[in-house]
Image (cartoon, rainbow, N blue to C red; front, side):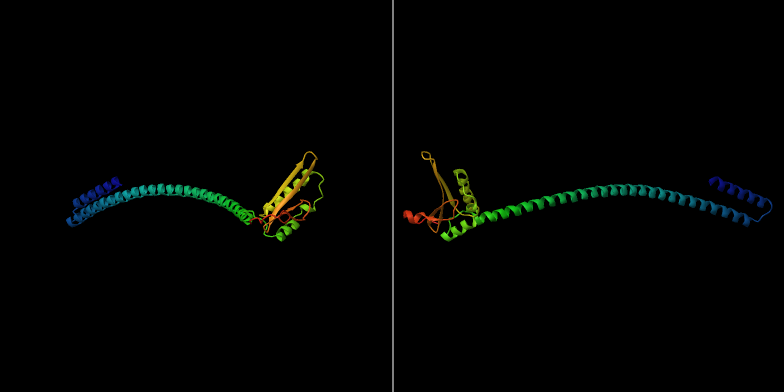
Length: 219
């Protein structure tokens, strides 16, 4: 472009000389020279403006590069946060599952504790009727009769265990006489302050306190 403007300037000067040699008026010559000077000034102004625009373009390019870098960084951070979010969601679900499991176990333990509190500590029967009604509800005496000691004593232990689960105290005893080969298995319970004994295969109560003139047993 500089070469082009130089040729234009030379052409104008030559043209001015020709005009001057041909007797062109001085005013026309001066006007042509003034136009050339103005054109040169405009050229310098355009060059300066072009340089400014190029500088702005370079600055804009640098800013665009920086913005692209920021965008890539932001996208990477978003991806990282998304991964962390998914991890936290998975962890929350695992913790919720553990909480639900522990809550279920706690409910079971609390229910078991409630059941234990209902029968603990074990106590004596408040009356003969309470003892008799409990024996009637127990099904051990409905089983087939036993002819040897082991199954009979097992029945006694079953009654003792069932009573303890319901919060009552029943004791079981076995006496074996080796010289005769005889044995005796009895159950003992306190009801209303009296001591009662009975056979594991019957629900018939014998008031041992009355027979032996025993004192009342504390409840």
